[in-house]
Image (cartoon, chains in turn green, cyan):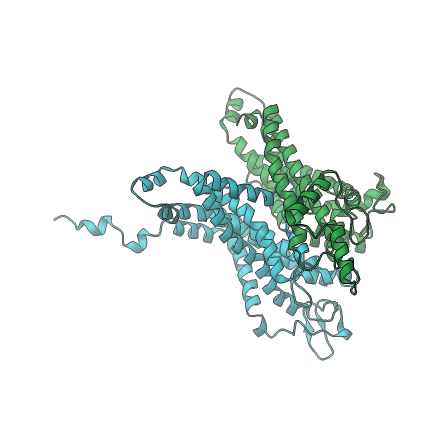
Length: 317
Length: 300
């Protein structure tokens, strides 16, 4: 097991390095001078040169990358051009908010998708299977930012049950798990959960069907095991894959929340990215994407390890 | 008298070739859901292509006096806005039909590009194996390490708004998954006996790839790619929705959804229309892709 973990970690290092290189290069594929947004339009050439030195843009690219990476490893992601505050602090605050949203959506989607997928896999070609399949295809096909708008129209504008946007009275910094705050979470989390719901339903339906077709199920049935006990065997066999899908989905939602956060003005990383893009705040863009990318890589590693812990076949293979 | 053997045993070439693909076509034609989706997509595509000749209103000309009118609104001059007007008083029906051009283009073209580039990279990696495989696949892993939405937004955000930048960023997003599938299918095909047989009989690498690998790899990869079109539609419109894709006043569904966001209080039905179009097209592509997958009996 330890060997397996070491092997995975060893494999992740170059990927993480590649991810940071890609983030670093983002600033350099951007057209125009990254300093344009800090400097006044009539800045003198001397001032431009001075700023260029201060931000380190005057050195060769590999050197810039090495310096940038070294600082990033130490937790320094540079300074936001627009606000003048350290990027790391801004990103961490936003990540916490996005995490609340993504976690709620993943759990919701996983619960619903898990039940639907299992039932559909068990009762193939029944009416309930058709309902589950339809729901899952709707879940993966619906433009979620539009679904968010539709839910706002229904539950905030027409029925006036839930707030349309924001994260509650505390704003971005004071989140609490009481109804006063949670009611702001309901619509964005439900909107976001349709994606994992659809994917989990599809995956589990196929998986449960496959498992039920295997010989060991016939063997268990032949020796007289009851359906409830067989069900537990099926759950045990489906668990590693289900876990992997859930982990991946959480990662996708953490990184892909920008559209939903924009619709609901949720103060998370997506909101931050949006601001960074439109103010051409490249250090902030770079830092946010780096943190989300590394999060995703780490989450994948965690999923791999957890999967191996649950399923001995994986760590031996 | 013995009957002439040729007619009985050897079928005419036209019939001999109707093996696999005829079966796929027959199964697909019998799939009612897939056919219905194909019909809807075809209708939208035709409307988009013929948009200037359908007698619609000018999709760019607005009117301050007739902003955000409801569905079925008729002007005093007797012109009916069947689907209402948008926040600048432009006819929604005309904009939705014209918008289909850009929205479909931005959804389909990146996947086509990625299909060509991704299959080439994947087949090269899978066939060459060894160091070439390592170099290609590890690079692809890095791109794969980003959630697709984040990667698309990161690249578009850095490059700036615009149709060509969206095309580029979406292509980059879809190359890695396609290359992965192509690589794994190629690797498994390469290990099959008929490839060894071809090599033993003196076929060169190019011939083996052209005849044996392409024939067996492109089918599954194509099916996989069709499934990505719906994701691409949602992502492309999403970029425009964020202001990173098409620029106003161009009609495009994602952008229309964005500019109509403020109208959800006054004209919720009109504001929801562009998104409904994205939804319909995306679900049709998904169902058609599912139908194609089972008709071609591809397991990925």
